[in-house]
Every structure is written in C-alpha cells, then in structure tokens.
Length: 166
Length: 414
Image (cartoon, rainbow over all chains, first blue to last red; front, side, top):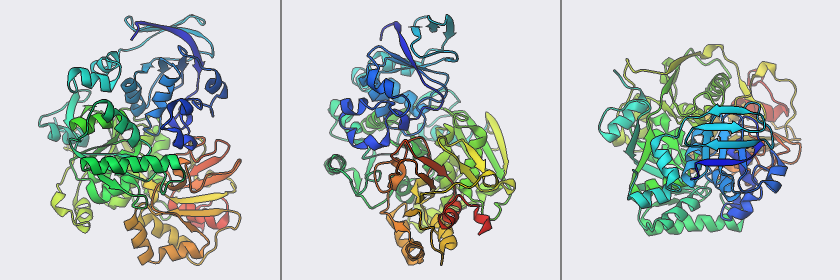
C-alpha cells in the first residue's frame, strides 16, 4: 500500500450501515460485483453511485459500516477504487472486512470535512490533512496483525504468503 | 484478577489466561454461513486451493428461502454441492434461520462460534462466544480451524426488577440500545446478568444476545446455568452442558444498572435502531404491514404472546400481518399449540421458517411510503427492500396489538 494517499472526499453522515452501502434489494447481484458496485451508497447519495472515481476517499460520521456482516460492502468500495474510508469510529465487522479485502479504514475526526475537499493521508506519519480546510488530524496505526494483512494485500494473500495466521 | 465471560471462554479455548486488548489466535468450534455470505467464502477457499474444511461447517438457506430468483437458487445449490463434497451440513430452505438452528442444535456453553452473519452474537445466550465476521474471515477459519481475535473489554449489564405486564425482553434490549447508542459498545462485549436475566428463559436471552451487535458489540453473553442445562436437555444435548459464569472479581470497563420494573414498551423509529421512544410518547402512526418473526423474535414464546393478543380478533383490513416462525421446530410447536390457527383466523399470513422480509429480498417488500412495524432487529433505510418506506421495531406484543388497531399501539391497553 502507498505511504501517501491523496484524493477528493465524498462526505457521508453518521451510522452509514452496510444496508446503505449495498442495499438488500440487490441481494441477487452479490455474485456480480461490478453490477452490485453500480449501486454503492445510492440511497444515501445517488451522485456517488454514478460519479465516484478510482482514487476518491470517503469521509463519514461515526459508526461507519454498522449492521450486517456482508463483506460486499467493503468489496464494492474496492471495486469502485475507493482506497480509504475516514471515520471517527467503524463498526467492527466492517473494519475487519475492509482490511481483509484491502480497503484502508482510518479512525480519525472528520468534523468540518465537506464534499470535494482535498485530503492527504500520510500513513508513515499517521496524519490526515484536509488541504482544502487546512485541518490536520492524527490517527493511530492499525493493530500489527491488521497492518500485516493490509500490507500483504488482504487476508487470503496474507495466509497464503505466511502459511497461516501470522 | 477474575475474568469476564468473554475472557474466560476465549482463555479456556486457548489454554491460558488472556488480557483485554491482547490479540490471540483461537480455535473455532462451529463455523457457518448462509446464501448471502457463503458463496464469497467459497470463492476465497477456491483461491486458496482448499477442498477441505478443518472444523464443523454449517451452511444455511434462510435469507432468501425458498429462493425468489434464479441467482439465489444457484447460490443455494452451490452451497449444497460444496457441503456434500467436504462433509459439511447443508440446511435446506424451510429449516429455519441460522441463529435459531445454531441455538437449537449446535451451540454449547464455552464454545467459540463464528458466523458470516452479524447476528451470530445470538449464541451468547447459551454461554458461547458467538461473533459475526465477513466471508473471508470465515473462509480462512474453515480452512485453518482458527481465527484471530482481539480480547474485548466488557460492559456488564446488570438487570434487575420484574418485567411489568406487557413488557418483554425485546423492550429491555431496545431500551438498552437507546441508552448505549448504536456505537456504545463497538469492539466490546456485552455481558448480561443479574436477577432478571437469571430468571429469563433461553428464548428471552436469545433476544438480548441477538441485538448486542445493534450497540456495536462483538458478543452478547449470558452465563450458562440451570436454565441452559434444561434447554439443552430438552433437545437431547444435556451431555454438552457445562456451567460457565464470570468471576465475582472480574474487571469490567463499566457496569450499566438497569431496573426493568420502570420501563414500558419500547419502539425504535426510522431509520436507526437507537432511535428509541417509549410507547406513551408515540402518536398515531398508521401501519401497512406488521411482521412477527426473525432471529430476534420468531420463537415459540414470541408467537404465544402474539397469539394471546390476536385470539378471536381480526387485524385491521388496511394492513398485512406476516408471521414467520424462526425454525421448523418452532413452526411445528406453534401448530400443535393452535397458535398458527389463531394467526390465520385473524387474517394473518404464515411465512416459511426463515428470515422472511427482514432483509428486503422477498416475502413482504414494502411499497413506496408504506410503514411496517416489525419484531426484527434493524430498521435502516431500505432494509425491507424500499428506501422510500419506514420500519419501526417493537416486541411481538406491541406488533400483535398494532395489527389489530392498524396504528402503533400499546399492548397494555388491549
């Protein structure tokens, strides 16, 4: 994973659930990720579903990814090229899923962040900078096991490479 | 220092003492997935070239059962073929909801149970450390028989007082979620105890444990006691029983005291589970659908409560009443007790055992602008298949009373 990630943000509110990210009415599309990904977050922001681009970043309110365990919620973000999600807190299953599939979840303050703000994430420094608003927030690194999984490109490559769980 | 239930169960399974915030690799006793999450787990097993599984694996057809579309029929067939190939258990549509079947047939006090479904925390009702994960974690655990876990802090929920008439375990857990908030227990375990929990049946404890995740918790645990032993004995599994309780000097992150004699029926308003209102505050809200069922409240005791209210009554003709038993056993028992007749005579519709309309896939999708009162655990926007609809959550008693009047109704008034 790159040490510096830079891109524009899409702003979402508190409590974005996996039902919001991948609605249950598209259950039958779970076997067709590119079709499912076209509907990502469409009930919250149809503009995102249509216009999010690879390299974009999500900045959300607290408890991002709450609800169902569906890993597709993390996979559709990856499919759309979303490299990182910023939130003051993540629901734990989504947090694991994101790392397992190679999407970076960053626990940091997002108060005051607005749609389209330019964000720079420095992984080595553990710092998120909102270049548009001139805000800087520190974040804690992932726990070691999750960092290794992410660096290896996800849980399956991690296990294949290391012959087991760490 | 003593241990909480979470520390005790995980510590016992890895054979040493564990500390909060420590990362461990633990054996998994039971693993499961369903048609919504299983196929992705099988994809990952294929990537790893694993044609075998290392521990008990269960596959369920409950979220879209019987399948409403060919894509979902295909994934159920795929799970069935895989299960036959590796010697796992496959449950056909109609057998019931994964969490209910795990409780009836598999969960044992002291086990670690991982399911590719967020409500796997239900198994905590039997003193098992059940927690939900994604498909890839479950795939890895199927392949290796192991999982990595962080030892969670525990919030002890000490519940006392007698439940007033018309107030049930569902009202207790809704009240607690309203108090803690949907993120109040993220990364933590909830441990339910105290005289009220001691006096609860396993079915009631399942309702508490089931919704632990709605406060963000990793697990919702109850001690395994004489009530647990009786539950297992009834199902011919008494040999599996062992008592498990937290140590009296266990360390908790915090202790929440709850006197349930003071609470009234609770309702979660759209579109968040922690948007809790006491029934007295609820103004006239007309309903289009009432759903009684799910892994939260589709058990025999739930159907009994609803049937008692609906007996000899008619539902409001403007709404649909759907009743979904949580398992085939629940369905059979409900028929034997005459409960199903009561629902049908009241003009209700009986759904096959399974998740029913809770996930928005089939069997009760809402029209634009419609309102549903459901005994399920979630009311996120679009949850029941239509983002332009509203979902309210309540107990089976409140649901049954509301089905008669056509508006959200305090069951104590009927």
